[in-house]
Image (cartoon, rainbow, N blue to C red; front, top):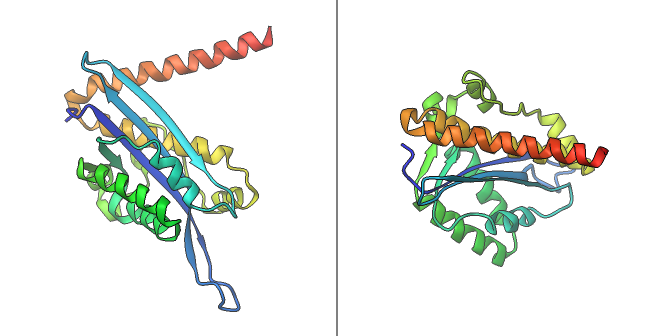
Amino acid sequence: MITCPIYIALTAVTVEMPASANGVHAAETNLVGVGLFIAKRNADGRWRFERRAHAISAGEPEGTLLEWITSRLPGAAMMIGWNVDHQLVPALLDAAATAPPAVAHHFLERLTHLLKGGVVDIALRHGGAGAPTLNEAASGMAIYAPVWNVEVITGAWAIGAVDRLRRDLADEAMAIWRTFVRTAGVTGLDAEAATDAWVLRRASATVGARSSSAT
């Protein structure tokens, strides 16, 4: 049901680094990007939306991502994700374990508060840990979600070409939100219509800006 005034759809992407051949470095998982889509319903029933994403290059500390997301997580909201317990939260906690203490503390404090506000894992409706990818589930509802390719992600992270990665993360966060409201039934119709209108306004503004720059 659509009853909470603030929702945040959250997603993250990681890369797997194998252990070094000489055994000096163990295999590890690195957080390389996070995306969020925040939906706020005002007292008058109107919706406001925000779509954001951030990604880092190889060599940049994961703490940079945690600082970025900590400053943007709402104080109280319902969190929505895909495979929250099996993928999303473990990836964030692993990054916090290697972050500077102050960064980790502030992030974990905000994340804990967010989790207490309620969590909806939409993957549970599609099989939980055995669910297909979000792209597969969303495509069945005519909702766009990016297709992730491990080699492409790793390559982009390695050379610092993360612009596409940011766009995909932002799109995935919005796909999570769209899937959530689509499955909310009648109570999600208003939120879905407001989301569609917001996307159209942004697209029109982008086209208008391009036309102005071309004249």
